[in-house]
Length: 364
Image (cartoon, rainbow, N blue to C red; front, side, top):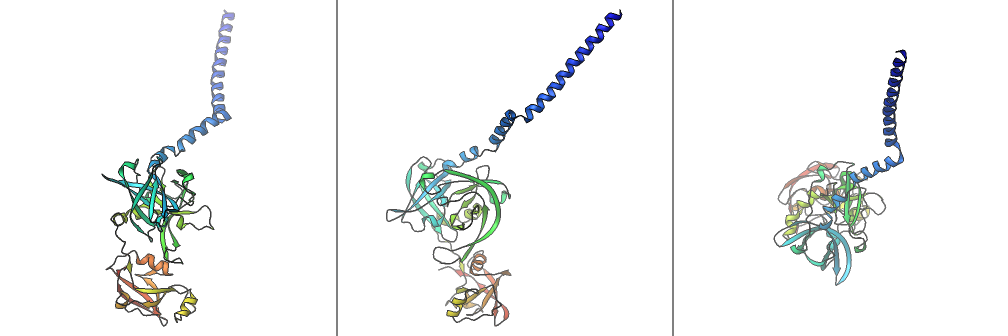
């Protein structure tokens, strides 16, 4: 009887030992699976697939085109564009104005390698935007647009474009949204100095020659901006800019109809207060302590300014209470209004601050 009890005890110990070994072994195996190189490779593969932009690229790729600008049958410039809408007959492409500014003929190359001559419907150098039209049969895909306001700092963004021309068309670059509402200075084609400011998105994705006019996209493959090389300083690396898509789309109706954007004007010739040489040539003297503002060089006849209290030599310092640092700032604030709007211009004359109302007129 005692021998039987001893056997039962030994059996229970063996079963308990087997059970313990099984449980302990399972725990060890799970730990090994989590931290061994083999499983680490599998984990990394899973993460990579989850974060891949491949499916998002498919949503935009066939809507992107290469834009070629010709002058007298000679290729002058290349850029990128994208089809943002279509109707019963045509597809409509957005690109940068500076890509086609000197052209007498514009062609696009589709993702299907079709080279097609397009019609330029409208363009504007201050917007740096142009609208092109293509026959509907060449439209494979229309880009979906979103809003740059829905994207946060640090969010992943990407571009599809043609850096360095047609040889690298369809190139995809990615990065993050680095900044919003950046004010950058630039010159328009008719000017040799920075006389215009634009509110833009800042990204760290590569934007190279040929990328201009291409889409900036969120992780869903929706257009949130239009890349512009014109806004990139050659001395800065890892910093590129894009025009917010909602700003661009707010003007496309005019461009599609071939209408000229009627920017409002004051009707004056201007000089930055820091440009001492020009001030001297125009016989305008200002206090040496004045570091910001715009000097009135000339009042144009029958202009909006001619009907106000402004005179030659006045230093414009504010528009509707917003500080004016230079000509670029003045134009940026001015172009927020329309012809016919009344604004208050604050200025300094003989050391005294004054103000006057100006009814803006159309740009002739």
